[in-house]
Length: 176
Image 1 (cartoon, rainbow, N blue to C red):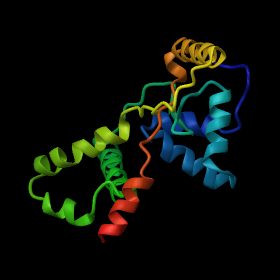
Image 2: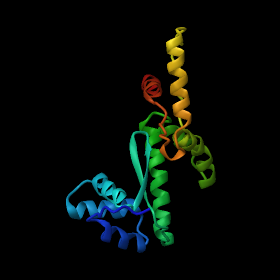
Image 3: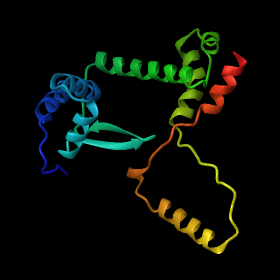
Image 4: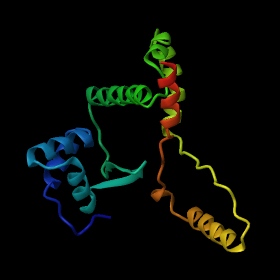
């Protein structure tokens, strides 16, 4: 449902999307031209009803409301950027060492099979470990209310968290 709000970026965004430009690239170009941040452009487009969003690890992820048909070149570029970002995350977060990646090079299929476990770790919703349980009745009622309210939320407002990597980073630093 389109909003009554208008965005000063709407015309540029719509034409870029119709040309098959990925939304993130279109917004980066618009933000650069208007000397503002991409998040400001995305927020304006969302308010105008041109984009949808989902909170993902504390960060809003946006996508256009309209279908995008693009060229094979643009699709391939987005796919490669996605894989590059995954590999950067694996190394920077301490999930794996560059040597581990190097040991699993060869065919594209072998490399993708090796990286799949990191991709699954990256995209799976994290579970939080419960702290020590209190035996008081008020604490149990509060916990039950919290559980009930968290299960009654809409699925569109689910927030996914990336796995914490501080302990794994320390382990790899010590080993290095």
